[in-house]
Amino acid sequence: MNRMLSHQADTRVRPLRLGFVGVGWIGRNRMQALIQSGLAEATTIVDPSPRMIEEAMALSPKARHAEGLDDLLADELDGVVIATPSADHAAQSIRALKAGKAVFCQKPLGRTAGEAQAVVTAARAADRLLGVDLSYRHTSAMQAIRALIESGELGKIFSVDLTFHNAYGPDKSWFYDRRLSGGGCLIDLGVHLIDLVLWCLGDPAVSNVSSRLLRDGKMLTPAAEEVEDFASATFDLDDGTTVRLACSWRLQAGRDAVIEAKFFGTNGGCGLRNIDGSFYDLTAERYCGTHMHTLVSPPDDWGGRAALAWARKLTADKGFDEDCETIVGVAETIDRIYGAGS
Image 1 (cartoon, rainbow, N blue to C red):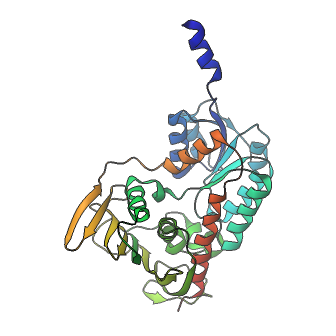
Image 2: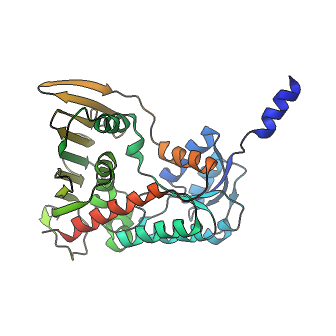
Image 3: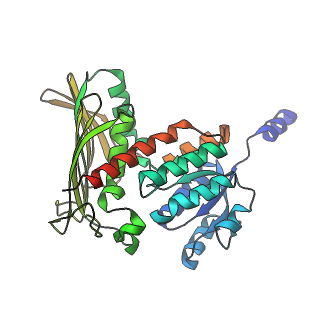
């Protein structure tokens, strides 16, 4: 019996050795989820803030504080988790991939589709796993909705309504600098909504894009240097489905947040919505005529699941996964919405 237990211990997969670039709130949240899962350990940490480093080291006291990205990449790491300002995502991801490390990056992967494509191309060339933190895919509510749509029970999906209103706004100044962020609420919040519809409906092509981008209630042109705090868009998918999207920062909607993704088909509908303004409590519902029943209810601890899914893939195979190419289609759609602003 003792020999059997010893053999089992010897053959157990070791935790992944991960480096963390950026350990603010979101970076530490992902670090904590990965450490607590037992899938990974935080080996090396980089952040310009001594306070953020101190808080991250409390989660992983044995981690090394590296002087910068190059110093971190010199370590023997299985992968790198990137949670830095958006302007750094593409360049840092590409450097890590070229150094032979797998990458898990916060959204957006790039400020433009060109940047996102460059990262995917680098991942393919390096034959390394690339993941992006599109976390709403991994909620139990959206998993149930996607399964229902793929089952064919709803018939043909012909209309989708997407909403993400945040009563607050980002607290970092770089979010409001287009050169650093790539845009405003659309690229911050709308990226999740666009990803959900393309992911649920099989990554279709997008056409006939129109949009309205506003700042403080005033229209912005595509060439504006200001970033939008309200965006609405309509676009068609190649199967004829019409998608309507609205997202905002600091909208006075009577609650902290309004988050919805509703899919309407010829045989019924379904939708995700947040409960009582919560950013975290989500439910999935099935619609049939004037009746509705619940598919999934909270609680659902989903915040770190995208990182955990990437880590599980990395444990099995560090090579390139073509699924990451779908993020380029999301980025292209965002570019087209920005370009169609009127």
